[in-house]
Image 1 (cartoon, helix red, strand yellow):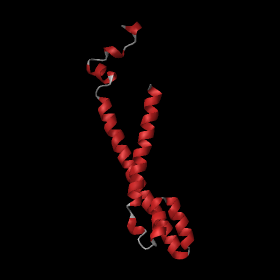
Image 2 (cartoon, helix red, strand yellow):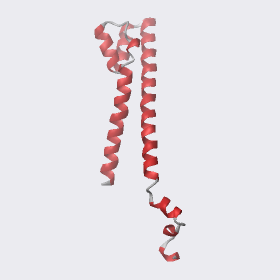
Image 3 (spheres, helix red, strand yellow):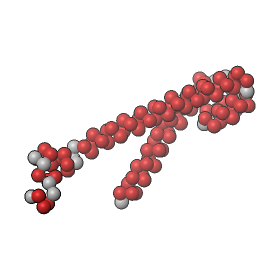
Image 4 (tube, one colour):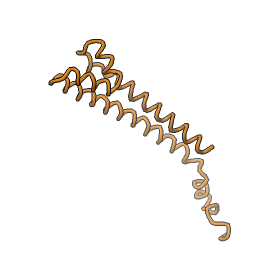
Length: 118
């Protein structure tokens, strides 16, 4: 049961952080507004698509597009990681209070002593 719970949590974490990152990256449309509609859709779809479009465009414009796409992705990924950190901190706070060790310390620590020492 513990493994299944951990795996489901990992999958949900990746899905949530990935969705946030993808949404924020795709919404950085100002970076790609100068492109023709077909190339704009490819570049907004993924960083890999933006790299392909930038190499097709070439020259200074391609290099600027590539740098803008990278910056947009890093910004979006940073926001996704911050959301994950906030969720982890909230989970830690919610789990901290009911932990048995915390309750034992509050009662004087008797529950923490080994059975032979009692």
